Image (cartoon, rainbow, N blue to C red):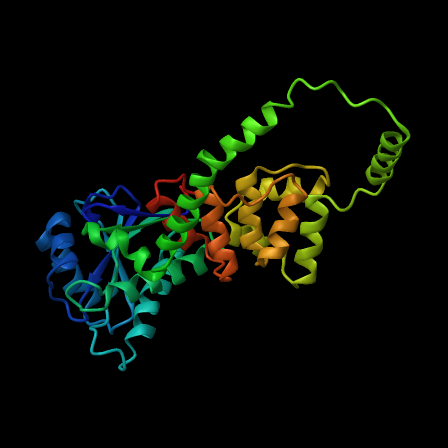
Length: 335
């Protein structure tokens, strides 16, 4: 589970480090800042900041002990004050995430909890703040292993992914409801029609059926590329590296190695779908590759619909996709 969005009080998180939204001067601000100071030990933390840290510009980070927290460390990200968006706020906010993660890596921190930096009392728009958080954490996880939480205190923030892709819900509802209707009504009619012929005797062997059998043998001799062979060829054609693909797909390296080294290896459908995202396939390539593992995209399966939606729109971001799966009560890929 490299990344998870949870609703909690960040001071209660039992990760090795938590991130605090700090001020540039050694003073305690409202929101996350004062909550962290109170939980860690107000005087101890403030005295440490005054004595060892001092002034820090926006977009920079520093680290302190966790004091009374469960977390061993507090990484303080000096959060940019939102002034309308034309004063370098985005660059500074991205820097907060980038430098916090690099500092955590330097201290060999294996688990860390982030708030949505700057989106509280600092005034950064929550939707854009979430986008930036996901962008930077996802980029970091492509080449690094770390358990990362985004911790939100307000339930509404957990629903912001719906605003990021506002038409996804209607896309799911229209396809899913219509196809469930067809499945429950029309398919029943088809079954009744077929059941009339259920006890028919087998067709006798004729010259025509013998010819069909011969054609089957010929087809079996002309079997095309397997899932593994086709995937490796697509990766090469797109000038991508294997590690780039399985990192983006959030597929375990050992599983990918099995697929690569065994041309007849049959991955699970969800693994195959994730690799389609990791290799940045279009919808035609995706359907073709899945078919080589014996799978198809079902218009009445919510997971398939969500993957289809992202692939059609060339949104190759497993974190955003995972948020949508969780929102619809489906098993998450990352968790």
